Image (tube, rainbow, N blue to C red):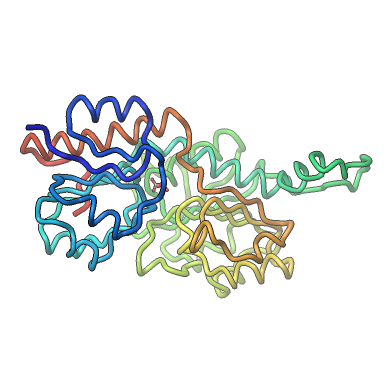
Length: 320
Ligand code: DGY
């Protein structure tokens, strides 16, 4: 008997094909977001759940899942939507999909940096709305990225790829803060700062790539923003929760920050409405991993993890 897998969202065709070949999948043909109650009901008799970060697995939900469920194999690298302590307490295996989305997310980070620095959102809107009337030396002047200093918060896989791209492609000087200093090879010339406060004054650009956790909730607050050089640019392609929205919006309004580029938000898609009113914020709808290559790879990685569990071995990407 093939293990039964509840799949909460529509996945790439090649991934669903492999699911149909190796498992008895319960697919979501419409891609509609399931509520927690839907998931609990649909999980009756299933062996595994393959969710995205859009489905929350709080302790309460985990404790209400049927006993048949052995594993939650996430289609995401982030797993802040799953209460891993509750999962561990129940003996539920949880996996994620690291590495395969580092390039795609780094690309979006660079896009956010360029979009914010070169006012891409404003420019695009002007052309589309036919409000673009003229060219002049003072028209749509932004700030250059090449040769500037980039501070990276969280120097894991994505942070390291961003550092490479920014350094090799834009000649940027890389600074980073991480819980632990990484090896010299991984640093590749980046300058380590043991404290976040110590790094802030060195960042013309600041990119957030830390894991969302209780410790990083609201990490980028008014105090830290104040330590950045005037006119700095902040970008976030990690999780919205690491930013104190009120503080960031205040700094964008006052001109303390030149601009921000955001792909992730608190309470997305119902984001703080002030962001929409600001012209100096470049907004994207959580597309960090949204390339066909990456989405296939994420699905295959989740399936590799399921294959390991159901063949009795340890999944490569176990996080609980
Ligand atoms: C991730 O993998 O964590 C991305 O944010 C998409 O969920």
